[in-house]
Image (cartoon, rainbow, N blue to C red; front, side, top):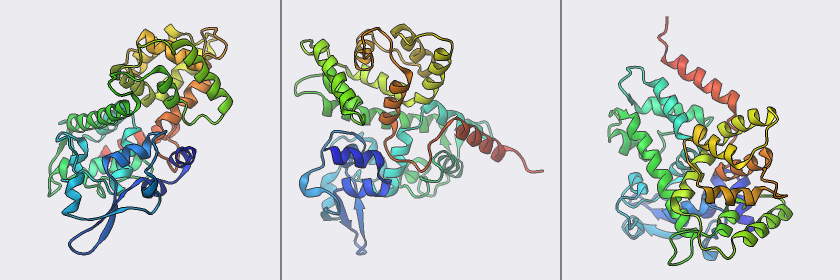
Length: 340
């Protein structure tokens, strides 16, 4: 388990893909490719989920195209079915989806609006591919993903509504979070325990002493309670994680003013910056995890570092910082200007 968590956190995308993928499929032409099932994809990005012992690195189920049909998602509305009839992911799909999961929705909206030269609320495949390449520093491309046919039609000439693409991102995030919440909760329960929520959040914490102390505090305070973390609370917290860089900037200004980060402060910032309302119970759990001495104050550095670790679904070649974001917006604006 510890090895797989380190693999998710530190290894290149290709190694993560090949370790967690379980399907090797032979086409009618004789070509053999490696694919992930939706369950493989979830295991590759969620800490604490163990890969089956007989399906680790370079061990696969060998299927032909007809046999692959049995791996079709049982949910007819699954977002993964947009990638093909079986819902299986190849490497290009995997890279694209993992990176899309880590980009705040409002950043995507702003970037796409900059590329909307006709101001009609639509973008072409070339426009979307450009923005994905720039945002991901060349790590992902729409051209190489099978998703392009679903979004832009078989001839790739269809104009995609910005709202349609944002709706796709929302469905992708929601499906991933719903599956993760299901995996974390106990049987016959509709919530996950506060302790399991803390374990999930602290999965990549390097200091076992800090992790164990935090889990001990959570267990002592919530061990006998049956409240738990609901799906809505879980999704609200994930929205906050997606906007971690903006939250960090806001907390930095607050910290420089000499003020402590107390529950009302964090709750207000979450609503203003990320547009989410964190429930009093969720706030209580968060402060139990990060408030080491019980004074009602959390330290910005540790809190933000943990959120970044949660957000980092895969290892990027470069970290996307504020300066990178400014450069990206500059490049997007330049592409929209007429050439004189």
